[in-house]
Length: 256
Length: 327
Ligand SMILES: Cc1cc2nc3c(=O)[nH]c(=O)nc-3n(C[C@H](O)[C@H](O)[C@H](O)COP(=O)(O)OP(=O)(O)OC[C@H]3O[C@@H](n4cnc5c(N)ncnc54)[C@H](O)[C@@H]3O)c2cc1C
Figure 1 (tube, rainbow over the protein chains, first blue to last red):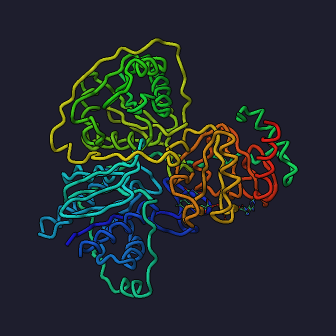
Figure 2 (cartoon, rainbow over the protein chains, first blue to last red):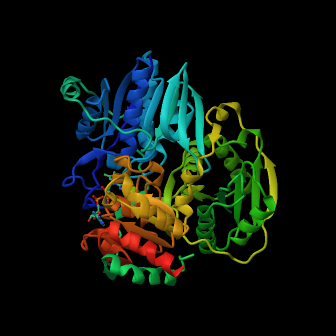
Figure 3 (cartoon, each protein chain N blue to C red):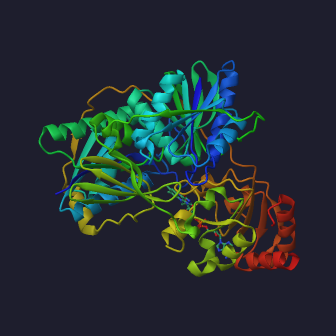
C-alpha cells in the first residue's frame, strides 16, 4: 500500500503566445488558458503508476488560487483518488513559501496517522522555474530526495529512480518515505477515460487555508524580450539552393 | 569572496562549458564589487588535477578547492551541498554561483534550503550590487524575471550560454585539497549506479558544433535518413522537436527546446520545424540558424539567419550531394 502525494501547479499555457499580466508579475492565462506543466504531468503519471503497482493511492495537492481545483480534477480524472487545495494567492508566494505549505500538508497527514510514503512533484514549475520547491520541501520534512527523475518504482519500501545524468544513466535507491522531483520525458502521461472524468466530478476536494504567511520571492517584475528581427537571408528555393547553402557552410567554417 | 561550483567530467577531467561561463559572470561581479577574489570549488574525483587547475586559473579563479572524501565520491545533492557549504564557510564567501545545469541547480538549491536564503536559478545578467539584482530565465526561457537577492550569501545559478567563457591569460589556480565529512543522513540519496550511455545516445547534442534538426516535416521515422547523413558529414548531432519525440519517431534525448536540451552550436539547421516558442527557447542561442521549410512564413523561417524555401526531402539530399561533390 504505497500512499503517494502528487503536487501540481496551475500555470498559464504558453504553447501559443506569451502574455504577461499588466503588473508584470507573471504570465497571463486569461486568453491562452491554464494547464499544469509537463514535468508536473509526468509526476502525476508516475505517481499513479507507483500507486497502481503497490495497491496504493494518490492524493493530488495544489497550492494556489481557487481555480486550481480544475487542475486537481484533471489529475483525479487520470486515477488519483483524493484532492487537496491549499487556497492562496500564488503570486505572493516564493518557492520557500510553497514548499512550507506542502510540508504542512505532509506533516499533518503523518500526525493524523496517515503518512504519505512518497511525495512527487514536477522538477520545476513551468512558469517560475525556480528549481527549489521539491528540495526545500524535502529539507522541511526531513526526507531524502531525488531530482530529475524520469522513472520511479517502489519495491519493498525502496524507491528506485532513474535519472539521465551528465555522464550516463544514473540509478538512485532511496528508503521510503521520500520525495521525488520528476522531469518530463520518461513516461507518456495517460489520457483521462470518460469514467475517470465522471468519477473526478464527484470527488470532494479538501480546501484548506494556508498554514503560514508568505515571505515572497524577491521578484521585481517579468519581461518578454523582443522577438528576433525576422530578417533571414533567403538562399533560394528547393534543391537549387544547395550550392548557396554549401557556400554559407564554408563561410561559417562548419564544413569539415 | 565569490565561490563558483565547477563541474568536471570525472573520466576526462574536462571542465563543463557552463562552469567556465559562470566564472565569467563571477569575474564581472567581482569587478563591479571592487575586485573581490573568485575561487572555484570542485567536488568528487578529478581525472587530471593539473589540467583542471590550468583551465580554471585561465578563466579567472585564483584558487581551486578540491573537496574529496567517501561521501562525495559519487554524486548526491545533499552531500555535495555539504562540501560546498564547508568551503563557503572556510572562505567567507558572500556569493555562491554554479552553472544552471541539473547538478548546479540541485546542489545550490540544497544549500539554499539549508541556509534558508533565497536562490535565483538560471540567471542571465545582473544589474546592480546593492541590492544584488539579477535577471533570470523563466517560463522555459521565453521570459525574464528581474529579481532581488538581498540575503547573504547570494545564491545563484547561471543559464547556459548567457555568458561567454573568457580566458584571462592567467596561470594555473592554486590547488587546495580538502576532505569533507558528510553526515550519514546526507548520503541516503545518491547515485548508486551509472550506466554509460551507448555512443549514439551520448550527450553530444549540447556540445556539437553543428546540429541538424528536423520536425514534423520529416514525415515519419523513415524521414531522417538525409538529416542524419548531413549531421554526420558536418560532424554534428541530430536534434528534433517535441512532436517528433511524442510520436515516437526519435528518442527523447534528441529533443531540443524548453523541455529538451538547450543548444548553442555554431550552426543549427532546422528542417521542417515551425519554430514554436518552446522549441525556439532551446535553440535561440545558436550562432547561426539555417531554416529549411515549405512555408516561408513559418516563425523559424523569419527568425533564422538563413532560409531555404522548399521540401526538406528534396533540399537536404541536394545539400548532402553538393558537399560530397566538393569534398
Ligand atoms: C509546455 C510545452 C513544452 C514544450 N516543449 C517543447 C520542446 O522542448 N521542444 C519542442 O520542439 N517543442 C516543444 N513543445 C511543442 C511546441 O509547442 C510545438 O508543438 C513543436 O515544437 C512543433 O514541432 P514541429 O515544428 O516539428 O511541428 P509543426 O509545428 O507541426 O511544424 C512542422 C513544420 O514543418 C513544415 N513542413 C512540413 N512538411 C515539410 C517538408 N516536407 N519540408 C519542409 N518543411 C515542412 C511546416 O511548414 C511546419 O512549419 C512544447 C509545448 C508545450 C505546450
